[in-house]
Image 1: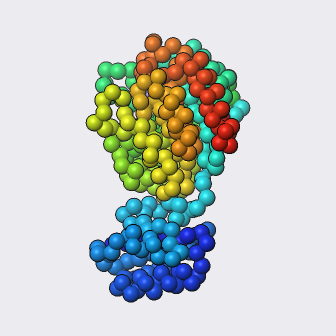
Image 2 (image 1 turned 30 degrees about the horizontal axis):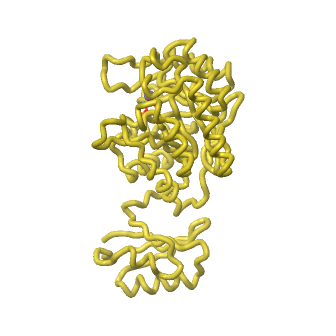
Image 3 (image 1 turned 60 degrees about the horizontal axis):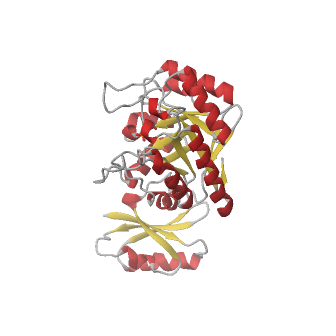
Length: 345
Ligand code: PEP
Ligand code: MN
């Protein structure tokens, strides 16, 4: 027994659906009409082993055939056709992800000191970013690496938020610290290493804070979207997905930024997806070309690391832009944005 969803084209009529139901019946399967808010579909159960989905996809009025194993429900375009727009609001600036805008979140990998985070915040604000990023709790591969300033880091982020008006995005690494992080953050980041920490996903799903969910280093798109499903299932629809690169056989880049996932995920889900060209490459020299590429393939924004002095950074310096290079990147994105009708902010 398996299950497929036949998605009808936008202009499909009742007669098309009746025809699909009759054909499904003829194949010895059971069809059921699904009436979505803006689109019709037919769910099919039965023994589909010998039936080629491409054959069903050619029936009149049919747009696509989706196996149910791929059918995340609440994150799916089947359930919600229009783009979800996630708002990220600070005291002096509001970011938007989805709905044709390109939101840029920028700042250091980790909060290191008051001077560092305030300088980064001021610089990214002036260059036009919509939000400040900065990790206070850092999940590091080595236990001997800098682990973040923790609560002190959160307080410094709060100060940068007050001084610049920018909303703050910061990572929450476990359920034990969720309460304190949520008190200071405008958006909760779930890092790649925690993408399948289901207890944490459920916990952020129970808050009313927007969530930035990063793709796991070895996660398939299916697993990535199922992780988002955990958050939404608990009532929090404000989820921004982040393509931050996956581990492949390639070693010359830190990760392989999977740009194809962006338009594919936009087809599969109504949630916004942004790119992370810092972690996606590990090399500041590759950020500008990949930021341009992300905009061109339809990303809803990007998150990028910016440090006042990358050579002295306590984490991820090689993939951090200087303030000047970040301003240059924003300028280049605005040129492309104006040509394709996308607002960069
Ligand atoms: C980060 O954003 O600094 C980070 C740790 O990213 P990721 O979880 O994608 O590795
Ligand atoms: Mn980092």
